[in-house]
Image 1: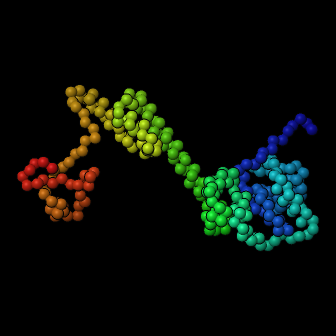
Image 2: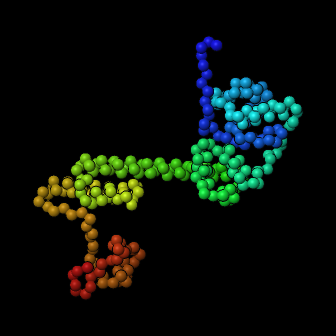
Image 3: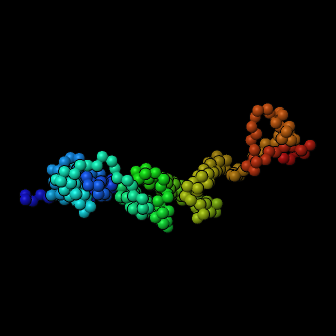
Length: 264
């Protein structure tokens, strides 16, 4: 020894799969370990002698099952057993099938599968997956991606709300009842508060600008504006505006003048 040492990784996150030995035995291994078999007996023996395999420029620790897999392959190689030309059939027992499904997943994917399985019997768990093992693993991966994207969106929404809250506090608007009510509303998710907070903030900023430009003026916000139409019925309006789409009020109504009345 020259005093140097070798860093060995546990290899978490490397994709796992089910490997079938020449003798037909099944083992849950990581993909680089299965590839060692294709590289010949010398590479398998080297991995067993160091108890590691190489992946992305680093040495990764073999698991007990991976060691048994390589030992089986070497023994089969010595006895002259040929590699099966067809893959073995998938397990028919639901629990065994689910175990094999899990064996080909990464740690994050396993955690997602556990959530999907929670509260279900092995039969109910198996019924969630209609395809073969690899297609079912892709279903788990797709569910994990959707969960991660939703979490990222939630984090972005919270960050935006926090940003708006800071701006509101900096401008001394947090004491206003309407804004305080939006911020404290526990019934709404962060992303659902963004439009209301943004609208209130913009209304207050514009109010400050308007008051600065017109010190003696009274500024209103949240005002509904109605247009008084010359038509007295909707049918009359349609006749006078062929092909046009009416702009309705928020309540879905249009305002018409009635006889000589001036109110709408």
